[in-house]
Length: 295
Ligand code: PEP
Ligand code: MG
Image (cartoon, rainbow, N blue to C red; front, side):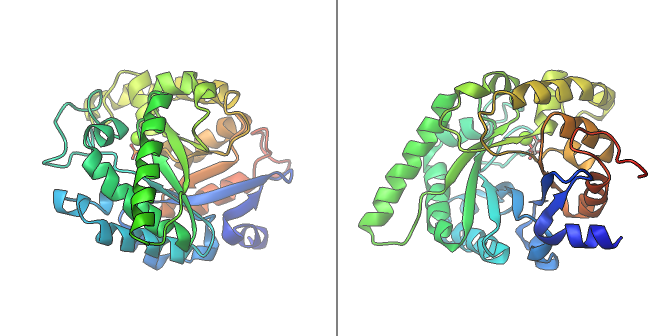
């Protein structure tokens, strides 16, 4: 409808009762943005950098990464671009980096801190890209605040190095995925995170003790949705007024939107193909998750 077409401008929508909502996109392959008008989305809510860094050679290639990140920032024209640092391991193996310990083992930020030479290359590429737009760096699989401190130290040291080399750079905002239950329950202790993003794919897997790639136990994860929603609602109260979004697959399923709105979420990041359906569903709901009168 006309209202919907107008409302989707820059991914800035309103619920039926006039509460502002942001709708942004998840990007896997970096070339996906080529077919998408930047003015139709509130930037990129999640760029999975595993799709930009597909080999050990890519992981060591600062310039290649820098070009990819800069391109996304220029495309977004000042809207926020959330680039997640490498989430290798578990369902996202990368041979030569991944130690094969799976979803409960060395993955995400754990792996980055165990292989700091990989994290340092990515940090430099991100630091150099930051002046080209509004960059938010998202850390995957964070369990404890100390992991964010350690990564911030890497950014500070690499920024120092770039300064010595007289290479333009900027320290970006740094936030975290909320996808490990222990981190969700303790969210108020993460003073060092500037923003939060719920990863319901991993939250569901860990809450229901059912692997996300196990098709024979899919039912367990689906039935765990109520538990995930309850944890999200309780976690929102611990977010200290910082920006919070949701980028897991539950955000792209219209049936969960009433509960997510009721929990207080106002920023949804979904796969590009799901954006129209989620946009029209959101404008037909009130901010408390109830259906708009006459809708
Ligand atoms: C998630 O875990 O919900 C998420 C968004 O990240 P990924 O699917 O890449 O693990
Ligand atoms: Mg995840």
